[in-house]
Image (cartoon, rainbow, N blue to C red; front, side, top):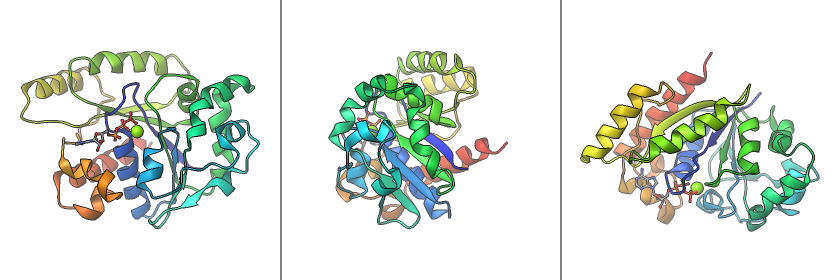
Length: 248
Ligand SMILES: Nc1ncnc2c1ncn2[C@@H]1O[C@H](COP(=O)(O)OP(=O)(O)OP(=O)(O)O)[C@@H](O)[C@H]1O
Ligand SMILES: [Mg+2]
């Protein structure tokens, strides 16, 4: 059975795609058969993995259970890492789900035939809260939630927990600090306060680092072009910590 991990936050631009990419790469490099499903119509991880943003039949057919999901999966330049790409049709995924029966179960259904093919399935989510998100909450074993340590992130996180905790059998939450500037007093204070209040906040933080920003130019993961940098070290530590929490 595959473990489904969704990088998710209601907020945009917090490091969801960067985390999904780097963690999925590390999982694959560690020997796990790994799939990344780019759920964002903007297709950032599809672009980073050098795959064409093209989903034959579009998002509607896929979530409607009328596509052969295995035929839509593409290989990447990385061994054991596959991609289920996004295309712009995904912007209507909400409407497609709304029209389907049991909409919140659709993503889980799409992934069901892949459970034996992959050890890990990463879902790179768009920044929103919608039917797509609800469907992600049912499909995922854990939500990986990047938190930028600013004043309102604690409030956003509380809202997210309310939504997730309200559902029996819902995903585990693993939040982590992202784009952290250790020189900022505010960042340190927010991190300290949130870590003390919540045991679902991991201890590894991803620093604000130009190595991560460069992913877009290099179309690659930090582990490959800057393995000794702080960012690569942090992603490795984060992946270890996540794996540790997943073990029963
Ligand atoms: N740790 C970091 N240090 C510096 N820059 C970062 C870091 N993480 C992400 N970024 C940059 O911030 C921008 C947003 O990152 P990313 O695409 O990973 O966020 P996202 O949450 O997936 O965004 P969206 O909500 O648009 O999908 C990108 O330009 C990325 O390079
Ligand atoms: Mg993204």
